[in-house]
Amino acid sequence: MTDRTEVPWYREVSASQWKTFLTTFTAWTLDAFDFTILTFVLLDIQQSFSVNRALAGALGTVTLLFRTVGGIGAGTLADRYGRKGPILFSIGWYTAFAFLSGLSTSYVMLFAFRGLFGIGMGGMWAAGMPLALEQWPAKHRGIASGILQGGYSTGFLLSSLVYQLGYPLISERPDWAWRLMLWAGVIPGTLIFVAMRRVPESPVWLEKQRQLRAAGARPRLSLGRLFDPDLRWVTLHTSVLMGGFTLMYQSTTFWYPTLLAQLKQQPLAFLLLLNAGGLIGSVTLGALSERWGGRRGAATLGVLLGLASAPLYLFSGSTFGLLAGAWLIGFMASGAWGIVPGYLSERFPTDARGVGTGFSYHVGVGIGALGPYLIGALQDGGMDLRTAMLWCIASAGVAVLVLLWLGPETRGKQLE
Image (tube, rainbow, N blue to C red; front, side, top):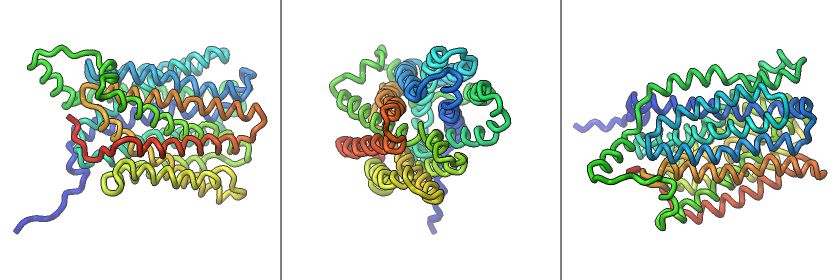
């Protein structure tokens, strides 16, 4: 008699695969923590350096723009020399510049350090996602993609907790409080650097290198591969698609703590719901993309319902309505990101996967970087913060929906 008992999906993943996956997840979570902790102290920074809202928002914009440099550079190196080296460099880099940011004595210095911080942030994603996903079972890549991308929401969730619990202890010295907040991730960053040194290199990348050596082929710089005839459209499409995704996300989140302060709401409950929704939504929609609608269908569902939730998220007149909006837009709009690591990995071949995912994701981040600055500039021009956020969220969401369906479905593709 045949045993028809199904093995739970998580038992089909080896201990080594779990180790690599969880270490990458933790590094990406810390990366997100170091970026999002800034959003809680924008008002303190404005007061410390006497800058307007547009310049405060530009601190987020410059980080996102420099992520493009890190993403392309680390992705290119990851294809040529392996995934682990660029990851270790990126962790050390973003930890160092998180620390240096807190030492800034002028706005210009802080602006420069946050830009340089972005290089490490971009590099972590570009090299880390292929490392984790290349050795993951193909039939479970959707859920792995969702969990990995949910690391960003986890990092935002942790920064919310650190701010809520730690900031009141130091709030009497606002000029020092924001610096201590920016330093909160330095010790964890050092620990995750040590942990990452112990994970194995990607077996898919190692096999590709073995094949190249056996054939006597000399590998070319993978950045040029993105503009070969067979990949030009893939590179262009994924980059613009990620621009829409990033613009929608940054329009939803970057100024949100400031909005809550204007509404005289304590931020913790709202940010817990927003980011718990994003984490659970990423896993849910990532898993759904393996069973219903594929990558495009699952993401479309999330974006559509996220757009429908935006008025409640921004304009509800009750605390309960605002809380419900935070959960819904987190679960749906942020949850739609759950397909992204898997989808991008499936669009590019192994010899260009690091640079392909890094390039498209971070060129998209560069496009989406306009969001924090644009919303700040619209406020300086007299527009209400909520209205400015809504216009940017809606415009970006519509762009994502159109672009999703201009590209192919990739569910079930083998990474070779």
